[in-house]
Length: 141
Image 1 (tube, rainbow, N blue to C red):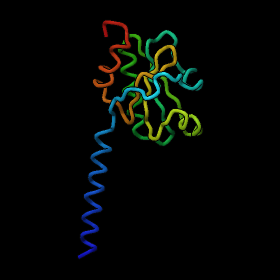
Image 2 (spheres, rainbow, N blue to C red):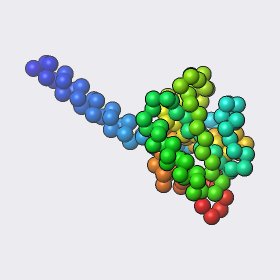
Image 3 (cartoon, rainbow, N blue to C red):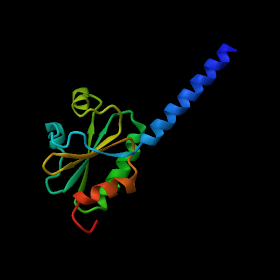
């Protein structure tokens, strides 16, 4: 009887944890470090002509990173003032630590001055991301 209760409790807890993680997947969050400039490794991939660069932080064996890459590249190709770049964190744990990245893909929206505007953990939701970026993009998007 005790074993069955432990099993049921474990399943309920695992289910709740799964729901929380799923709800957070792809959610756009304002930057916690908007005043701090991004590290030089990130600054090097910024497009100085773009109002916003979407910097995708990925790892080699990350399956959702491929989906995020397609989505972000397409969004950048069809949105004026938006550029997409990717950084591989596989061999760069110090950069992941400096950026407080705990999962991949993580997408940072960085303006031309190198300030982080917002971030998304997981594969972004296209419409939510575009809506959050509108104030930072040239009018007409």
